[in-house]
Image (cartoon, rainbow, N blue to C red; front, side, top):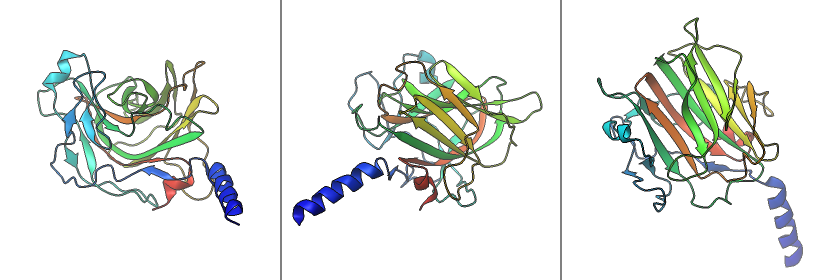
Amino acid sequence: MKKIILIISLITLSLTGNAQIIKNNLLDGYKTGDKLEKSAYIEPKAMIQENTWCAAYTKDPKAATTSSPIIGKELSYPEYQEGGPSIQFGFEDGIKGTRSSVYSMTSSGKTYRQGSYYLACLVNFSKLGTKKPSEFLALIANHVGGSARGNIYAHRNENGKLKFTVGLGKNRTEAPNEYDFKKTHLLVLKVDYTNNRVELFVNPSLKGEEAQSDAMAKGEEGALKAGLKAISIRNNHTYQGNIGNIRFAGRWTDITTK
């Protein structure tokens, strides 16, 4: 009987695959005005600081002139259950440049590299100073930063509206619709190892089965060979707004649950 139960358990586990909320409450314990980063990766082979927001390792000397993002207001979206405060975009007046902050999940490249993974968040841009797609969120294959395996970009189009783009390596695809500034949007980035591609969902329905994506970028051969290790947020002096309510999951339905 024990052997039968064990076999059934193993079969169930294999069928569920990535069926779970893997990471959420990424800003647990933070309050408005706190600095996001608890530490910094100062060398490319630095030991992982697991489940912690850190300044990403970089060779860019200009990054030293920037500072950690701070915690801002709470965002909300109908039927999306992930709560908590947000991360505020932009720097203090006069500071220019970009800065990446990473939330390191694992140092192993074998943990998250099979099937599909979903990264959901809420974003509210009040202003974007760029008319070209600029990265603000990514899933990466290096816990200290870099080696993106799925990026989301944003820019302001000629109509003064907000546009989103998804990318995998050198390949990018812009979502066709335009969106309003000063409004909270639900974004879901899907990294599909089986089909070597990434997809972007913008304000999808959270009822029922997985929605139709708004944009898809196919990777070149081997683009998704490495596993996911961290979540990266890139701040920019041309951004104004907030991003938060981040959830990393192994299936679509785990985006909709509490």
